[in-house]
Image (cartoon, rainbow, N blue to C red; front, side, top):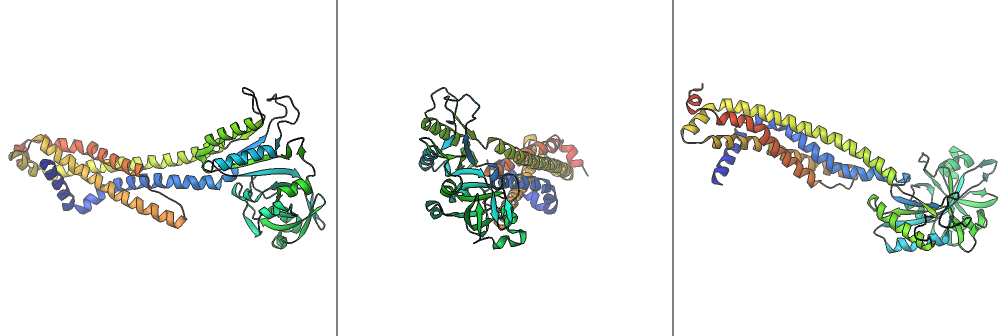
Length: 416
């Protein structure tokens, strides 16, 4: 151990003696380590943000849909594959029992309608739902407010308009004046209490009118009750706490519905589950490809840094040939000289890696604060960067060190 300490101090003294040259030598290692840590640390935070942006693709929800009416399901009863309020109540209890898996649940009672205001008309889709809909689907309110629990309890004649529906009925320049006006939906008067901001895309609510589910049932759709089962529903949406809960959520929902609907063991489901597996796979694949590419660039930078270390160590061996001769003349073995130069190469590499890791941590914190992201340092990336730095120091420092160790003392002392 004293010998190792002595060699380590010699390596540090060598770095101090040539500070600027050492810094230039470390540059590749600094950039490679910083890139590796920054990319892997920001990757998780950015992935969460990407998933949040694509939440309307269903990345955090399970959609329960009616069973295929043409399929031979669990029982040969017409209409039994349809969803009802009984299924919703059973799943509502499931959500309450597993708050660690599910965030919320909302019903959807959808139907095409004719909407009119003055001389303007449109044919949007009315969706009867609850106030929790805004936690499952992205529905930012631009004017007015969203639906409330009181609206549902009172079967209030209120509606929240999608951006394009509001434009069709009131004109683009008068959308902001839509709140408070009364429109007709299938002949029923509804007061506009909110207008959504336009988002675009096939999964947005731009072409929809959102109303309380009780209003949809009692005032617009008429009787949609299934015999003995209550209100018929178009679909039921369950929001998940995170993308990691898809498999567990699916198992719980499937088991609950099969039990509620008395599906015999071995029979196929008489309902369908729309899972976010495919969308998550696509997004994770894109994120993994980008992260992998940048990590590859970081790896190449580390290798280039290693080549720089080898080059500078070869120069150092040449410059310090007489020093090597003196050390050997005083009794230093080949192993001592080999260890000295390998340790110097490792010191350059590790110090460079530490500088890069420190810079990356600062960068990650700054990006998190500036972008409002919840970021955390990937300590696995930090460990990988330091391990790679040690390996590069040993790998690229060994050849120059071996050349130094094999020098003959007499020839080394004669070197000018």
